[in-house]
Image 1 (tube, rainbow, N blue to C red):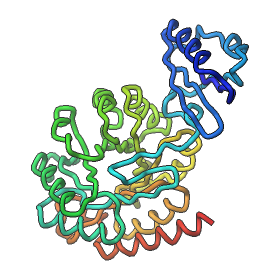
Image 2 (cartoon, one colour; image 1 turned 180 degrees about the horizontal axis):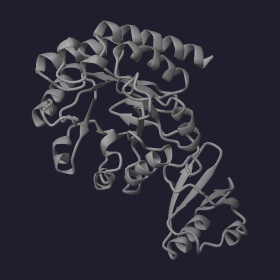
Image 3 (tube, one colour; image 1 turned 120 degrees about the vertical axis):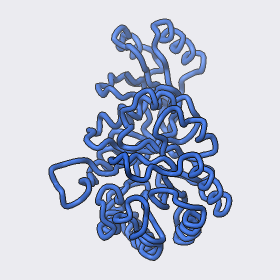
Length: 334
């Protein structure tokens, strides 16, 4: 349920309403926009008399929300949420490009790529320390040592770092990580999501391989219900019958999410397509449909990458991609 207040409401009136709702075990979240103040009622609102609230002279309207996600719902929070990652803003018209290797392989490899992508316009550095692989025999990442190398690259370039957590037991290792990524396989790891909800770090939440948009938003709701509103959604392709690409990139998810939620949404064309030759056109398309950013895999030697070399761009290709994306954003903005 949401309650729209008139502009001339008094704090005493608001506090009396809060106290009454609290007595019914209903939590009240307030969102102040430039022209409207909205109260989001979270919990079991079946016993709340909407007509009684509407009768209050400082209330403009009362609406019941049908969607199961409340905190992530744009009805509760009409204005776009902007996530600030050490000065880098995502959402609300800000465009961020996260770039780097699929996996951290060595200090020299990571730092070389980090300097290159920053020069081309990347605003954050990605790199996998823990790698979820289909085969147990494939490279699993450098784990804690990989995070140490990411921090060295951050010290060198100043780029905030983004890396994926695999399990709740690893959380202490992420104290100095700027953005914690939750991968597609963990999108519905609800115990992990609840724990991340108690942190104060931005969370990059990837869409599950076969997840609907509502399921994806409900996963964001798990994090937000714990008190952490710093969520960046990431469309990374879904599994369909098509085999020409690694996954099917659902670009329609971007405008759909924009209509349903206030959370920023970025696109990962690298994992979606699985082939470097398709990454650039899909990145441009993502910018055209209104994505708030991109996450791109870049490697200085893709043929010899320990993970996902086929979908990784060279630094030169990434530089060209950034120019194309910025050109299309200028066109879309007109």
